[in-house]
Length: 238
Image (tube, rainbow, N blue to C red; front, side, top):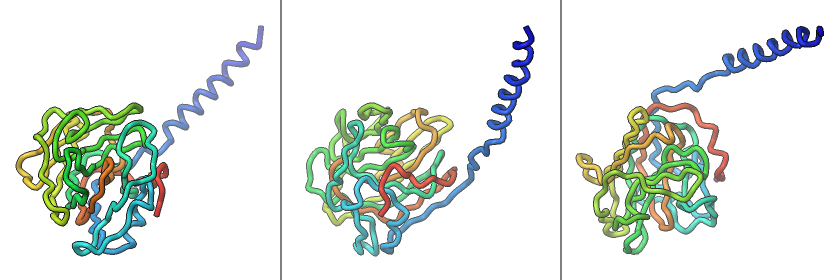
């Protein structure tokens, strides 16, 4: 009859240890971060993690740029973009992303570039898909959550005009995790070309790429609330 009473202190001790251990775990240190990358030097690629390093290179075009010049040999776990370059230094919560890009593919309806955020794994992230023409699979904000991508945009335009392959375009993406809002701007910074409201992923990595096309990126500025990243080890370093 003494065994139950002898076990209680041991059980209580284990529970206390677990609680204290959890309480002692350091919380993420969220802070205001300004990250800038102009891709003016080849060494800038070392800060990236990509789905296939053979598909990316540094380009001297326009004073220096990150170039996606061929298709990645990458099989996504669920239907989602193949070409992704992740900025590995920080995970962002709220942010404003600004950069310039060129779309260097031939013209067709799904001619695209993609901008990733809230990326937590290869099967959990958002991306803004900017394309010539909008439909169920193009020119929208998409969520990938362990299943093939689903559009979550609440408003979009009919598409964007990429123009010539040597034409640079200005991109701005605003994310507010508290209210879930996402707004994407293309050249005109007064009116978004797409918007959404979703709180599935409140923080994660930011990245650049395309579903299955090619292009260049430069003059990137990313400002927001962030924590240091763990390197995005689920993708490959250069």
